[in-house]
Image (cartoon, rainbow, N blue to C red):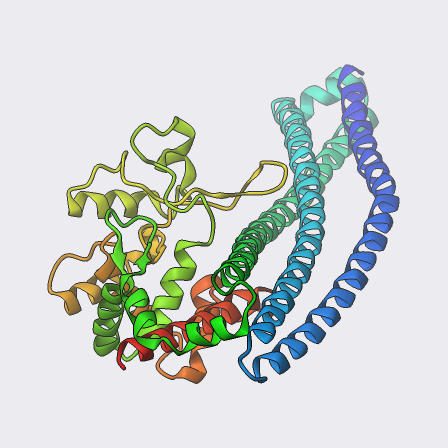
Length: 445
């Protein structure tokens, strides 16, 4: 009788567990409806802002086509600032929506993890029960029960236990597959969040630069059109300023002038066929994506900034150790980028990007031999010349062999795709490349 009671308890526990899972689903249904309503509101706000951005961009294009006067330049900068502010608002909405998705995905992972543990516990109990039944011979059951009918009941209960075990195994497999899919979704969502945060940092930097340019322009001209026209016509002075302008790249131990950077970019362009101005724009963009670029894994940094913590373990740690070993560098004090963090301080994705071009270790391993073939020495991601060459090789493969292909190549450099969610990056690179081309043309006059 004790065995029958135990079997009934097992069966009842399984039924109860199924009811508990159903109850959880019933409780989460209203929350999902609320989340859908919030998402619809976010999408509506985003559509309205994107419409405003398009309008301001049309107005900005018209102003840029007008006569180059001081007032037009100020109007252009103001329109640019308004547009960037709207773009920042749009990114904030996208990040808020993504945060909600990440929370939902993480909740699903937690629920399925708990369910998997419960199923494992139940299967363990049933397996123990089956083991007991296997060690309980049929003849002994007949004698113990006193009749054949009671022994057959025991066999029937054994079959029920086996059937329940098969059911639990099926549920466990389904839960495992759901967990794998949810973890993949979470990884993709975190990658998207990291990209959006990077775009947001870039937008904020460009907004600050635009405001600074406007203030500097007004200080130089005192608001006088004649002074502005004199500044525009003084091309020799401007060329000298361009040559002497310090071109700062995070991760480079010494600063170089813009003229020197142009020479390196033009040399890399000759080797690869990628336009020098575009190369300069890419590396400038990469070096200013955020204040955390190159601020992890330095001498004196706390343990949480170590490469062993901030790099993706199964992807980048081993290649990083190989790269630093080949170059004779200390892996514990060679600077790399830090991971991004959301508004709550949670780490988003992984860090570990190296040098001016911001290649992650695993990606660099696929380009280092091509770089060495061009430079004739061991490739070093922290060397500015090698960084230009590596970027050029990758960009050329992504379509930057022509001016028309540069936008798509920049997008692929940033996120591996041409997802228009990140078009601010590609647009910014193209705009920066145009400015650099004008600077290079001035230098060549």
